[in-house]
Image (cartoon, rainbow, N blue to C red; front, side):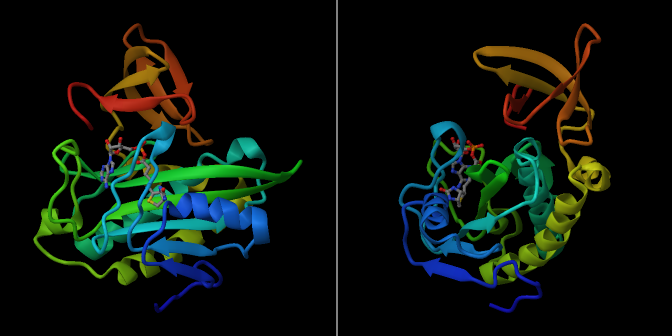
Length: 257
Ligand code: BT5
């Protein structure tokens, strides 16, 4: 694969088949602590993982199922916005390559025409008191022709454009883009510089959202993103609050987005 990066993706471990690239990446960190930017990429996952024990459909040949290993110099509470940084880099890359109006759905999805085209799962491992490793797992539906019926809200670049895309071109573009944004975030430790670009591409801005906290649901309007990557929402009673990605999942009102 042709790469234009300083270190992202320089160490690549490719598999035809694997349980989950995230699980493998975490194991690798514990065993050998591979260099920053190590990329685990598999053509197929047998047990692709979503958040909260959900599964991620990862059929052979049709998608990008990959995990990046990072060692950010950040306090543990600044780690979860790395998911937003990866989402932003992938959103910019896919928009440029496909020409589709792909948007970010805070905090970890990319959507187009109301359907999900990419999902991100970041996991953190504490190595020492002030030393963390992060595995950022990204799934992109590229050349998928059809999904199981239960995935009614899934789509792919092929289904949206009628065209096949080269997965390596997408990965290479993403790695360059992500390396730039990751360095900004890692240096500044806040989402301040990336915030406006994220807001511009975020499907939730000024939209009604349903905030799920545990078993409870609250209706609100998403108004902005905070400097630490939280979603600022206004509840129906006018109260403003910041919700963090660890606490909530956001749904559109009445449908997926
Ligand atoms: C996510 O979880 O969206 C995170 C997905 C991360 C997948 C990558 S692939 C490489 C790496 N290795 C892994 O094992 N995982 C990561 P969540 O927000 O929980 O969404 C999961 C939900 O999305 C499922 O419950 C389904 O409803 C739906 N879903 C499953 N597979 C899908 C697919 N291929 N495309 C679109 N939606 C899907």
